[in-house]
Length: 499
Image 1 (cartoon, rainbow, N blue to C red):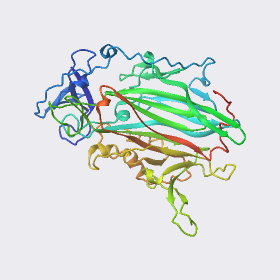
Image 2: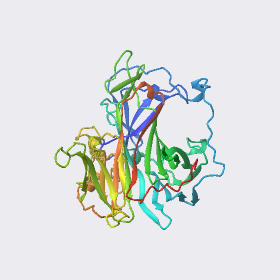
Image 3: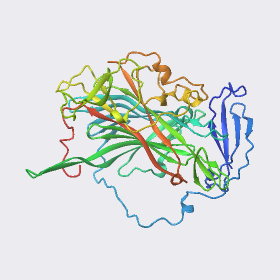
Image 4: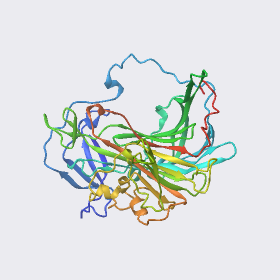
């Protein structure tokens, strides 16, 4: 038997108010290594008071659905003989890595930063700067993956209340994998051990919780000039700082990439096991997809929020929004081929609570209005967002009220040390309304201020048979690319060939 306790959510029920609760769902397991998610026990949920240490309610919705018995195990002994067509691929760094480490301080190429870690966020990057040979130019003072929310689109007994806030309720850092058994990093790896405390306040060390290594990343720039015979190209290398957290059935990898051209990227990797629901023989599953015989996978969403305390060339920055707009044909556009780029500098928090618009090519720039570059422009960084959903739950639902950060792709706030988390300090069993919607309601000035940029992004997961028993990686994330930050391509001094 496998019992999974979940955060209970808040539904304003008299018997639940004021209690510290979890809701528990059960799975049948024949052996220790059996995949319990192949055998869900449908229609029964135990509500447990953690302080009283007792079940206060056993919910049985009366449905009688047989427990699926087919095994879908994924441990190596259960998988049989592996394919023999894959040849070895070796990563070799005979001279060692290009990065240097002094305690928690890292320097690589032109980059300098400090590695940090918290129980709630996991990996944190501090004082991310670019050294141009004269000085270290600050870009981000502090960056982390701040919150996650995973609401399910199934109104039945086992699922309607599931909306895990993986950072705020469980702690991504507390659930980080200790990579003593190895990880997916190749090459010369540097691991960071993290001093930690368990739930009872006892000190311990999380071995190899953060992984850092370099990756070859294909072509950086290239041109063949057929008129002169000049051919030049440079290959790209990126620094990877990452950790993995296992939150119940799902596994999440958080990868910060630093590139030689000044680009910063956060990539979230989603894998693990989807939540499952029992389905009768020949039955359908109206809340998602039948992923294998007698098993349904509920449709759900994954929302992430990254918090970046910006510091582009100094402590005071502004954020502007830009779109591409076609210019009507006429005297100033006689051939109809001209389009313009609009610009709006955000003055207040409410102005800056924005949604992406791929049709208009909408993007945002974080600039320092107090500094000019060699062509008279303000140095900045451009936020490049990927195609990303917003929360689809009804505005009156508890999950939307508690996960309001997922209703906008971009938020900007003036720095306040008390405003640390996208969903508020304590999302567990919270009735909603905290976090970014509350912070930004003050509508404070954000132009030429010490600002925090919050970016919400995610993935709507319609399950499919290919996601079971283990889901191949899905990706979500964003990039920050230099925009007027450099006077020219900063990688022109890289050596030719493999660098």
